[in-house]
Image (cartoon, rainbow, N blue to C red; front, side, top):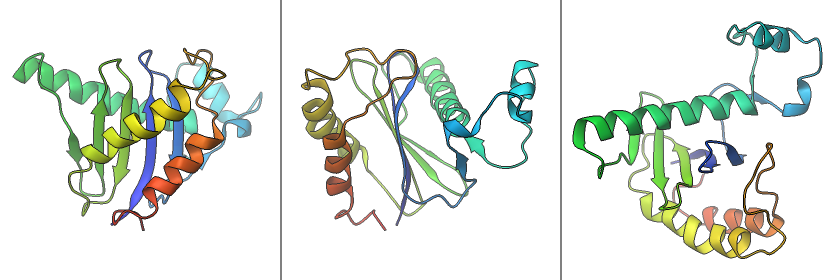
Amino acid sequence: MTIYSFWIFDRHCNCIYHKDYKRPYRQLRPRSDFGPGTNDEKKQTSGGPPTGKGPLSVDDDAKLVFGVVFSLRNIVTKLAGEKESFFVYRTSKYKLHFYETQTNLRFVMITDLKVDGIRPILEQIHAGLYVEYVIKNPLSPVEHANGVGVNNELFNLGLDRFLRPLSIFE
């Protein structure tokens, strides 16, 4: 059982935290690899999709992950009603686990197919780590505007210490 990646999105649909653990799928380019005049930037400014050649950027991957979550959540609420939500989305290659707080923070963990029922783990990450190290931190911004995400070493260390002993971490 393996955790591939972990994402946190704020109520404004911005990715405020991302961490890759093991990626069997396409590798990401860091944000700094996008300089002026690159093919991907020209393609983006012309309104077209990314070229599909080579790895995506972290920003592109975050948009794709959030797009899946947003779309699935909308489909579920239209079919089942406002009080319903989805918890897991499964493909032939991975599972996407989803937890949304009352303040519209969205926690997403992408795992292999053998992992089941990690909603309590996502709840513990929110209540035990995010609230303790990010929300209660007076130096942490309340709103993560302009691409400023969670930059808290204690949160990073706490998340690693929490996930590594779990049976789903490989």
